[in-house]
Length: 106
Image: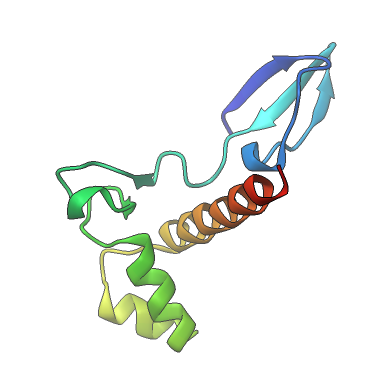
């Protein structure tokens, strides 16, 4: 697993999905699952977040799962998706909700 290091005492936020581990005076931050799998490109679906290498939007996956939680059905409908892609979509959505919540509290 790739880890980024921040100096001890650096702010850690839920938005960064910080999983803090004390290692030799530094705090290790685990990389969020969606960082490499979910992209935003103005040339792809007008900048909607999509699963990297596809034109499958985060919104499309969430909409499908909201109506039908059967992953076999999801993978049949979108054979290019993987379990890791779905985890990244859910991670991305969770971060979006967290950021919206925090913005509303300020």
